[in-house]
Length: 141
Picture 1 (cartoon, rainbow, N blue to C red):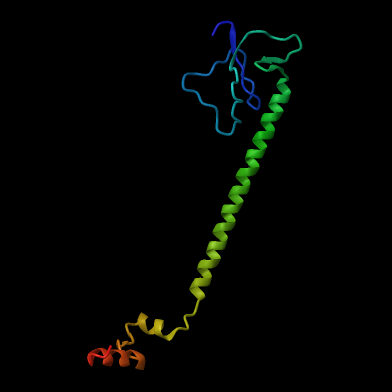
Picture 2: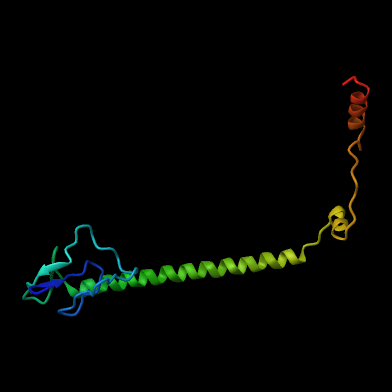
């Protein structure tokens, strides 16, 4: 664009003079989003003090780069924290798996079932169930 230049939002690195984003270009996800209504293209108007003119006024390039460095460091800290939490979760899961292997089952019925021995339970195995069944058969219930 002749007479215009690309102006990155706060937190983005300053492009080299004359740089224009190629078709389909997207900023990296680690960069902060542009403020609502941000003007990416402004008329060429260099300032005398070496600062870059943006849609919101002149911006000190060193301050903008420092902001990007801070955002980058914060993203790195968050990644390290996430990786550390995932590593801790894997360590705890391994401890749980090891504890399960050492678990001794004390329920005799389960142990017998594991080797194919099952205890048969008759439908009338207690006196109350037997009494109810007799009453139904005798027509009293």
